[in-house]
Image 1 (cartoon, rainbow, N blue to C red):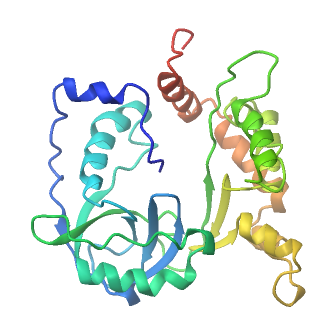
Image 2 (cartoon, helix red, strand yellow):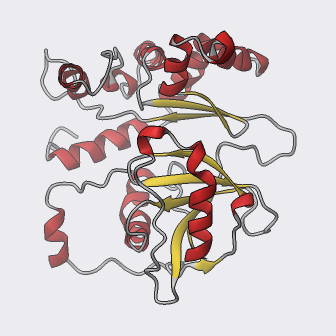
Length: 302
């Protein structure tokens, strides 16, 4: 998640406080480094799969903050009371707050460090006790990268759509304009043809085109997990261009895995994604654009 706040959020302090959720009090859990596997991370959070035997954590993932973990309680309350009603409980999981001993979090931080991307390793897990009981707060979520059924296989698609609003007719999307700037200042090696406006258009052919372009140049916009393991990302593509380990191509490997699942490579996956996001029964694209419009201050036409 982003660390930035929408415009006008400073005025929120003038409004009545959000109601306290019943499950705002973190539940104490004990997790050893051997019980977790690194899944992925963004700028502010690290997500891990729980692989231990604690009944209350089986089938779950744990999300830890890299900075002030006490903010997780405020984030949880905001998500529960503001974001969930906007998107709907069928599209959003708020999770549950848990707490761990600070020493446990430090041990986990050391155990997962070597599995993290090198460019992210400058920020470590927050292990400074900030709760009154001296524990660290984390968020427990359903692990969507693993099937709840033994021996069943599951493919998980992580898609960061970016802003799907067409801000000015005749001009490229904000994402595409930013691609040109990022290329010029050296933040990216290549310009992606991915277009968020098409991804959230609810038009089958446009969604399919956008997803295929995201696979061609994923950057941080798309990742694929197969049975809990990362099988496709920007790093995998870079490794494939460099020849991969032993000359192997990770890109070819992930498409072979898709075929094993009955999908015809990237084309089959693109068909599946477009069938879902362009379906009349999927209200997520409209709700995402409505929230994006509120953040931008342009809501009249919605």
